[in-house]
Length: 393
Ligand SMILES: Cc1cc2nc3c(=O)[nH]c(=O)nc-3n(C[C@H](O)[C@H](O)[C@H](O)COP(=O)(O)OP(=O)(O)OC[C@H]3O[C@@H](n4cnc5c(N)ncnc54)[C@H](O)[C@@H]3O)c2cc1C
Image (tube, rainbow, N blue to C red; front, side, top):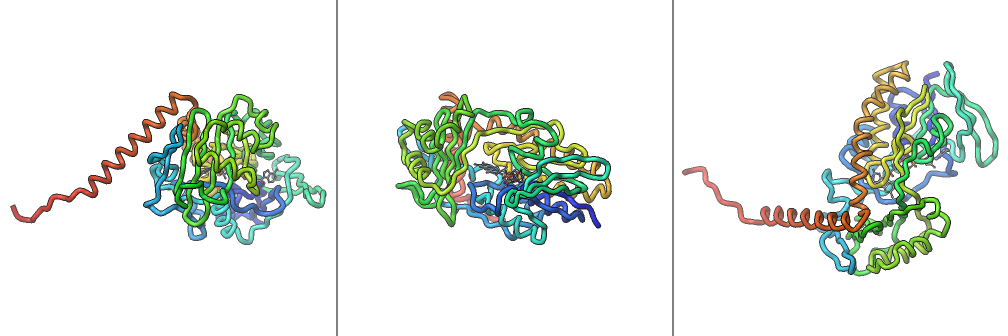
């Protein structure tokens, strides 16, 4: 029998790893804590490197994208609620593709057709010796436990990874606290007075609301804010807490997002962290995606890096057949510089999402004006009549 790998987590990283492993001739088995595959999710921008990795993994043809039409506006709201031209997430260099997390997962799901997936299953213990990695797995529905041995275990179980805790150490050792919160969900309708596909940003010192317009469905929203005490944020119902945090920000985007949250069928409410680890593998256990390096949402590159990780795993395993340690070493050496650079840049990017104070708020506003003035000048230049040249002098 060929080499078998256990992948813990059926998210973007887990499925990307499954494709990579299968491509390298391995047999992946995925266990997922949830009872079924999740769908939908929040807005994601996929940057060129993510699209390249998606192409390498063979999922581009299945990937549904939702970029608004080119002539649709992004608005920035000032402290009085007045709108002006804004610079949206999709205006960043690289022309990110607008998708929902569920769109990427749906594309990966199609590509892992035939891979064994066990829902409602979690790892309880992981031990390794020269023969392989033995995992005690628990079926959370039936309550049964069983041991199984694999040639490799891939922890793709997200920010609060159980594989990381069992093999590498407690969460506190690796999760840095950014003293910030996020709440993301799908809006049932666009904010009043804005056109359907428009995006809207209302950002003030310490708190911000983003509405992401999409081409073929209602927008999604992200509320994010700074906090001194992350644990206290979970002590009250989310909608109640957010009304307190955003009190006084009385513009149509904020009002709409807060009203919709009350009745949202589901939302993601969580604290913001970055995962920093000196090594992503230990023997035959490796972490990938948020479990290993969570860049966090302010980077806009979590999904991109998870796809890159899966694609690079295939190459590394193929380059080092029969030598897992060498393959994992080469894989990490290839990815580490990109992740380190982006982890640093995220400290700057977070001010674009939510400025930390009045000074960064002003700098952000001036920056947006500058970018817009530059864009207007460039557009005027393209519209200006071009001098006519003839071949003869
Ligand atoms: C609001 C928001 C906006 C974002 N925007 C962007 C963006 O614009 N661009 C971008 O590239 N990235 C973005 N990201 C980041 C991106 O979504 C993540 O980095 C990416 O989805 C991480 O995927 P993952 O597979 O590593 O982890 P996850 O998505 O967390 O998946 C982990 C999986 O493991 C399962 N699991 C957990 N524990 C266990 C267990 N013990 N046993 C079995 N299964 C388990 C979970 O149920 C889940 O299915 C954003 C994130 C957020 C929150």
